[in-house]
Image 1 (cartoon, one colour):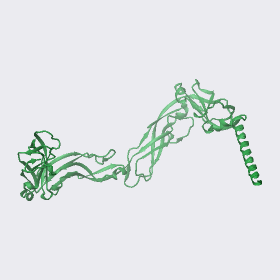
Image 2 (cartoon, one colour; image 1 turned 180 degrees about the vertical axis):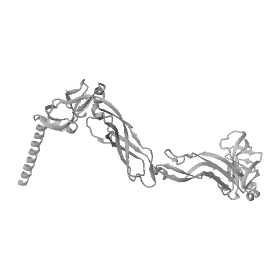
Image 3 (cartoon, rainbow, N blue to C red; image 1 turned 90 degrees about the horizontal axis):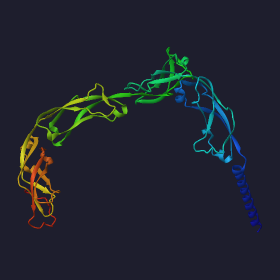
Length: 429
């Protein structure tokens, strides 16, 4: 019983503490008097300086380094939701109409996701922003580049590019008189790929002495520099021969035999040859074929060192001859049920091969097939024929072929024993 009383007292104490803590949090966050927070060294931002003020022929000469301290008042709950790093001080320059010392009012700008309705500025270190305004003078100067270091062995640099290529400077006339150019410095030590960097620049006078003047304003603070880094690689030109049976009899001459490519190292690494075209052996004739002229097609960004853009190909076919065989056994395939197909005329097939292969050629070396899968009615049809030779014959078929197929109704019911629809001796079932 005594143990239960002690446990009950402990529970009561814990509950009391939690209730007290909850009441304290509620009073502090929701009921307590407003509290303050101090934000120090907020830089002043100026609006309309490059537009409205510049259109009036005026510019700010001082005031850019001005900062403001603020003391804000609100409920603790409100200030807990405020990111003080995002509080800004913004002064509008559009009201300035003349040169000299000017006084500007400013606004306190809060983050977009923060409701400032319950916030009061209780104190500020400055109530106005004092700036010096001068007459605007513009000057356009070129951007120069200085390259330091050496690229990796076997690489070289191309023409350097800057963006922008010129700068528009604005300042009082006295500040601008001696400014000659802007310079950026690029370090290319050991580079193997094109460098693209965004860099700060330095102003120089006509004696090549650096000029550091905070009164000079520029159209941009950074310059993008692109420095191509290239290498070379010699690769052969080639053609793909299609038709393996006769490749041993074909000699290909390409002029030039090789080209030296110029491009990014990473791009050239994957290029080991350049293919001009595919040549089908069956389209050639015995003896010389050509010469054929081909454009050397290269990937974007890759060129040749000497500007070569074309190659000439000559193909010699030696030790071969042509012959013909007459084929009577033409297979009609995929004939529809209830129909039969016949090729009434034999097909004369032109062949190409070595003298020995042509001398031994017979109709048994040649297979002719006709596909009738699209035919569903009686009639006479001219259809393409697929002509092939056996691998061991060493023969290649020349040309393409068509045959005339007569399709009629079958006089007897089709055989359901599973026999093939393809028929020999010029007959399809």
